[in-house]
Length: 165
Image (cartoon, rainbow, N blue to C red; front, side):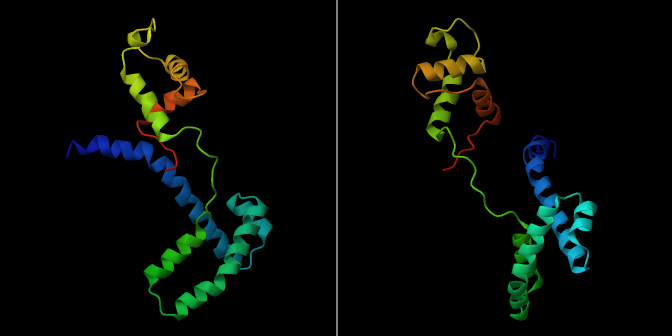
């Protein structure tokens, strides 16, 4: 049982901070829709749920557009699990592409491999790599054109690259 704790701790620190805000937003959106269905106006909903009126307007509009779709789903005799899945999808954010990654997986792997080398092999006067030294060496070797020590630190701290495949 004790061997599970590091894994559980990792999930709490790495996954929950990402998942919880998403769940909280879905609950807020569901509350918004329920209040709108009761006839509460956008201003009151935005005050009650501490949302901007534009957000309330946007989600109310999305729900209006989806009402017919949900009616059809229900009329087709879909079970509760299927309807729940459709509702959760409707309450979720639409895909928004972020900015393109500045570094390829190969570049990140090369920087991590560089961190595993002895700094003395690179004619560095330090005994241990710092993110600044690694960033300078990665540029010197032509792995990347430029990189901040902070980016190097994130790659090493994370232990895995988070770039599009």
